[in-house]
Each structure stands twice: as C-alpha cells, then as structure tokens.
Amino acid sequence: MRPAPTTPSTAPNESNTPGWWTFGHVWLVLAGPVLVVLASFITMYIAYTRVDPVVDENYYQKGLALSPAVQSRDHSDPAHAPASLATPAVKP
Image 1 (cartoon, rainbow, N blue to C red):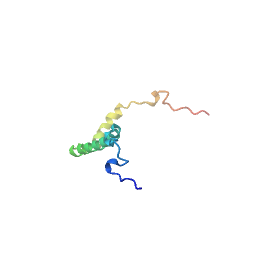
Image 2: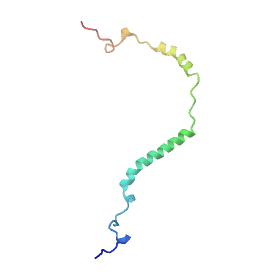
Image 3: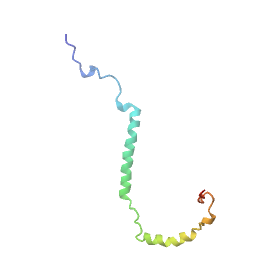
Image 4: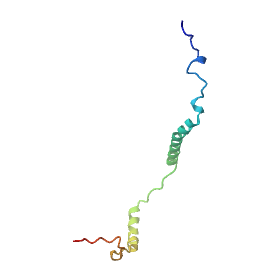
C-alpha cells in the first residue's frame, strides 16, 4: 500500500510556527550590522559634502616663529630637577 501524497497544507515541515521575522532576537542581531552600514553611508556623505580647511602653505615658517617663545618658556635646569628624575649614582 502506498502512502497518501502530501499536499502543501499537510506537509510535515509546514507547522504553525511563526516566521523568523516575528522573533525580536533576530532583529536585535541584525540591527547592529545594519546600523554600522547606515553610519558608514552617513559618514561618507559628510566627508564628500564638507570641505576640509587647507593647511597654510607657510606652516613650517609659522612653526619656526614659535620656537623662540617656546625656548624662552623652557626653564628646566638640571640642577633643580627633582630627585626622582636625577640619574642614579653608579656604585663601585
């Protein structure tokens, strides 16, 4: 005797289980990568639409002009350095 043919409504894999999209954990897992992709497109849009300021062509000369001010402000004297910074004496 042959078994009765199954129709789609009586197929063994077809139960009354809800689809994967009805479970909240699936959306929680998928939300992270989707948000990262969305944020990357927003970042790309901002990068292409906003103009970066151009670095001054005389940046090196301006840095050299600051050098005397920095040197005059540097009052480090090795004689007045704290003991923790002094070099240890070599014991014979």
